[in-house]
Amino acid sequence: MPRKNERINNVVPFSGITRDNYARKVAEYTLLKEQIAMLEARRAPLGDSIKDYVKTVGTKTDTGGYISDLGDLVVEARTRQKIEFDQQKVITVLINKPELLNQVLKAVPVIDEDMINTLYEKGDLTSDEVQRMATVTISHSLYVTKKEDMPEVEQKVAASAKKKFIPTSK
Image (tube, rainbow, N blue to C red):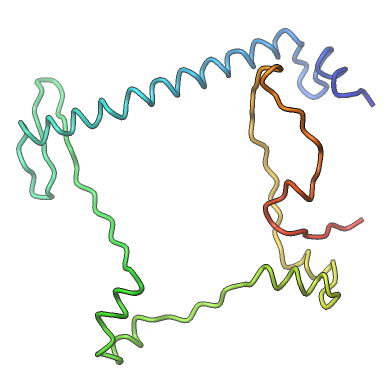
């Protein structure tokens, strides 16, 4: 089995990509990522400025937005509304109407993950039972860093996990 560096220096076994092609792809990826960040930084204030202008010179629509004719373009500042009910406010408003309050409140069971881990550690739950309760999804994020910027990292699986230990079968 080749070591990590041997795979990178020669050919990546599953794809036939040479080191030079691999390096070019990484360089292109890094450049695109930087360009996207710069474009996003420029786009946000530009969009805010255009929205402000449309609200000043445009015509108000029946949905509360604004629209402006720019010759071959139509520019709109569309209204979006998001409503989130605050649980405390709902209770405060409906406290004197218990029949309505009972209709809008819903009991939802919540899994206590810390208790599952405690029960496992105490031996009340088996490894198999815990595995059957959980869905483990593994994904990989891509990070490209210059070697001099890269910190020394110790491989500590348990320490790096955000969630408590979920046993795996051996």
